[in-house]
Length: 208
Image 1 (cartoon, rainbow, N blue to C red):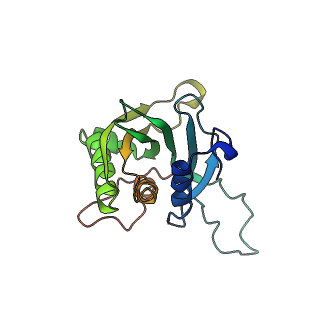
Image 2 (cartoon, rainbow, N blue to C red):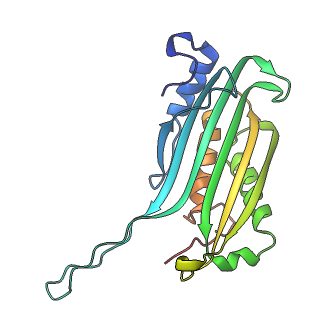
């Protein structure tokens, strides 16, 4: 796992944070990989991209059944996790580290009628951090519902609803791996994958 700022110039505190992220445990459906980190938000940064796809089944093979190409994988959820570090600290962050995240998932169009959809997504984030013991402060963010309609030659496409969550918070340095684990679990929740915390129901994702 690399980071902006040059490997040989990384402060020890940031190196420790990278080591903690490498040790994070995540669920197997989630694919996690390093992506280019933003260079203007902080002197040092590392970014991870995640997605969960649903691989459709082609059914049992039969010589009598005509061959049809398998449909492509359906993306259930996608997201980004960015860890920023400023050795001098930031008065805006109220600390040296800042986590910036983004998650997006496509849901059944009927879910767009639920006025509480955005607040549910925000609650999921807060509960995921709490359940994983990811201590933090100065949390902020937005949850947005996006209703897409198609027209013209695409008018046969069904309407879709996307839920998009953008958030940032200042983590306590100790136990920083828990923040990535909480976020990874949150991506799974957006994808509608059980198990979920007791008493929480999932948002059904779109199915063709």
